[in-house]
Image 1 (cartoon, rainbow, N blue to C red):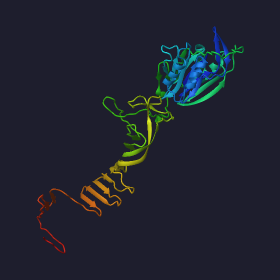
Image 2 (image 1 turned 90 degrees about the vertical axis):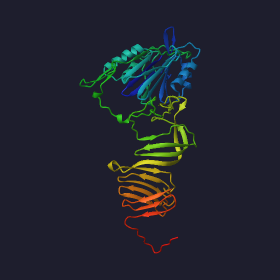
Image 3 (image 1 turned 180 degrees about the vertical axis):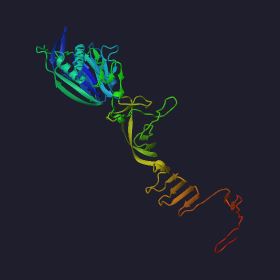
Amino acid sequence: MSRFNYVCENGIGYAFSDTRASKGMDGVYFKFYDGYEKTRKYGNKTVSIGGYTEYADKIFSQITDSSSISDIQNIARKACKDVDIEMGVSVFLYRQGEYIMYDMTTHSHEPFEIFKTVLDKRAVLCAGAGTNEAEKLIQKFVSQGYSIFDSVVKSFMTLNDEVVGGQLIYYVNNKGTITKHVLDIPNVKKDLRHWNDRHSLHAMMDGRARFADVKLTKPDGRFLADTNNGVFDLDGWDLKGVGKLTAEMIAVNTITADDGYINNLTVNHLKTIGRDVEVGQYVDYIDIKDNSIQFITAKVGSKVQATDSKGRPLFWTDNTKTILSPEETQDIAWSYSFDEVKVKSTYKFINSGSEAYPVIDLGEGDNKGYGKASIEKPVGSLEVSYKASNTGKDRSLILRDDGLIVNAETGAVIIQAKELTIRTEAGGIIEMPSNGGINFNSKVGMNFNAPRYDFH
């Protein structure tokens, strides 16, 4: 028999189990030895197995750090196929702000059917040998002022016999970071019955209880929380670290009337790479950061599986690719790095606050930064300019409140049209009609000043 406890307290999760292996015969149990670890760490999770150790060994040996809950279910089903034995497998992990226990046994409606339990902010699950006694003892210690963690440890030290004992191994799960700890369990019962054959060791895993109906108050009696009624009084708490809340798993590919949208989304960096590409391919995307938007063409230099902030590999939950999860699926979420990054256009602000005005840069340009155009809109003007490739000579058109300036530094200005009319406010007119003629019209006279006049 085995005993397991899963605890959530002060934002930390704990998975407890003893190491005593036993043999049951006609309702009498015998200690076999004290060194069988029934809970083991795999990646971001711990796996606990109760039942026959030879089948537990088969299951443990096939689980890897990357095994998903469904993978573990399939491993357990294959290992115990066509045998009439009682086995239980539990997986304990932290995911998206919650401590979760996935439980599966041979005596469910479907063998190893998965049952999910989310632990409350202050809760304990009990399973296995002496569940009822353990639950009562834990509640007793808690009522005496001990923490849930200390109460569970004390219960292991108090309730041990041929089937529970050896060492207490507990894993501390601090929001996905898991560490292992070991305590010796002193034998309370001195005349332990011993079994001299390891064949068919049995450690049943039946029964479960939730530690509930916890009420929290401040020393002055101010109410804080009631787990039984699900009441949490935030006015009595000072929340710290809220600024660190992240939305790692939110992904939006396309906003449509059917699929919805995220309202008032605020981010500090956004890239619009919306399709899977291979190394060596080119991709066009938009990069928004700070106060600029860049339109970029780049070559994919590398392609690796994306990970979250805890280093866990990420997957899309399905082929719609809208939600990310560390739970393994067929759709891997890829992360790309790029070579040959070419900025084709940039929208940005110059200055800030009331002095800020927009600028649009167009073109990739040459290695000197020439060969690019820009459109600027400061107060009182609109400026369109181009720096000639290689030389940087200015070609610009400036529309100002007081007029228009055309500049072609050391270059030609060519105006080509079917007809052209130049008219001043005072009435002077130069007309170049479509027949090829030129007409001059002045109300005050025409002045010609040149060293020579040639008429043909």
